[in-house]
Amino acid sequence: MAKKAKEANVADNCILIEKELSKLKLWANLVPLQSFRANLRYIFSERVWNTIRSAVYRKDEYKCTICKRDNIPLHAHEDWIYDYEKSLQRLNKIITLCDLCHNNIHLGYSGSVGVESREKNRQHWCKINNQNEDDFKKYIFNIIVLWKLKNKIQWKIVDNNGIEITRIKLGDLLNSLDLVVDSTTEDLMQIHGIGPEGAKKFRECGITSLNQLINHKNLAELADRSKISLSNLKKYRFKAESFVNNEIYQIAPFIFPDERIIYFDIETDINSGKIWLIGLEIDGKYTQFYADTWEQEMEILLKFVEVLKANPKVNLVSFSGTNFDIRVLKSAMERFGMDTNELISHLHIDLCTLIKRSFITPNQSYALKDMGKLFKYPFKHTHLDGFIATLKYLTHIEKGEPLEQEILEYGEDDVKVLPFLIEIIKKGEGIIKKKFSDLAFLDSPIELIGDMNELLVKVRDFYEEHGKLSIREDKRYNSLKSEIRFYEKKLKDLDFIRNAMGKLSFREGSPYQYPSSTRCYVPYYGKDQVIKFIQTIKPRIKNDVSKLTT
Ligand SMILES: [Zn+2]
Image (cartoon, rainbow, N blue to C red; front, top):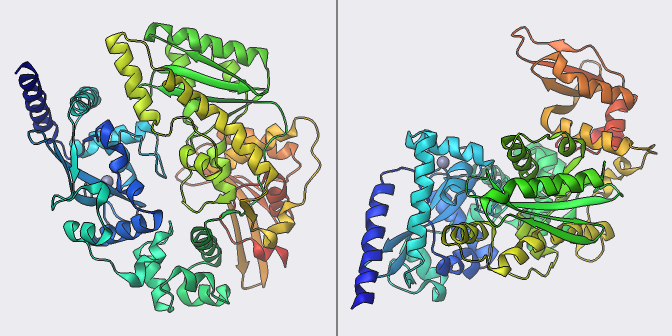
């Protein structure tokens, strides 16, 4: 009797909280722990999931169903409905979302491609829901409360026709979701970057399948006809081959300093403000600084700084694609009024960004979990992710019970996987296939003296954010115009890069200030300088640089 009453209470509370939350246009109706594996991406293969995804995008007319933005990368999201009284979790529909809405719906832990900064996600949430930052904090609190209540219920997970999701067949699923598969574009749209417009251009040139793209004899001719640039065609073809053959392709040199490295990773609270775990590895030795309570946060930050001081100038390596770890560390230190000079003096490399630049992967994801799996890293706790780890930590704080050991082991794996990845990539054997022979001339090494390597990485980072490389034909003189530019608001802000480029013996052209005076750039002209820049700095090249060889 008492148990029954308690269960009814859970359901009633859930209904109450959900009613309040569902007044928002964009909110995270988190999936209970028990159901994490009922995810369609786990049930079906990558290929089938991609077919479903494309059908969803078409149904939603290639727009985000929440904020209505289009012409942006799209995500497909499973929209579950919870019947708290019957303990039924039902797959209502699959909806198209943009990056920002999708990240919000998973509280920033979607683990898929394009994880934006939390800051950006929060702003988007406020804008869509017409709420402020304080509302956001209350909202996060309610989300977590609801999620914890949901975890107390034993769910039955079904589709709209009552079939259990883990046993469902694709046909039944499509039927229950009212989805129709269109085979003339959807095969191609399995490739990231090929949207409906792109698929249409391909179709007009008679290409409707990945295999037709892979086997096409003359890409230059196809570029002419399809109005898709040759460099994009090459990229799509690599992606298609990688996807179909389930192989990893290296498309550019992987430059990684051959020096001592501090690999590290942090775990934070939901808002990515406070840090409770810093894991690091130097010379093959793993250490972790753990704050058992929030009062110990400053202590672990200080311990980390001690490590930095004991290892001056040793490069830091983390994995996020957004410099997440280093940014959060810096702002946490600032919150305690700590000196951040030591932290800044270490060069930081975001391994995710480096890998993205050089590799194409069959699953087209650069999340750490996916990369680790691809390279066969033996993760100890595959059922955990950053989100669950954080929630378990918050529960530990709230209830005062000790944190489960597996959470700390999970944190350890997130660090140890980094040197593991680098070792495999450096060896470059087996699973990785080199695909950049036509750009081989860009790979010829140039002698570097002393700590030049550090400078190169800094220049490359600056280029990634502020630089542009252009190569165009000047029809009048039948010549090639090539240049590199760095943009900033004020000329003063370009001091660093002008100095650095000078040290590397590049000759700058005249800096240009736009009349609006909100933007300026400094150019470096000429084919020789552009080739030298590519050879020494190894930037991510988005242009077709094959013209430089002629
Ligand atoms: Zn959206």
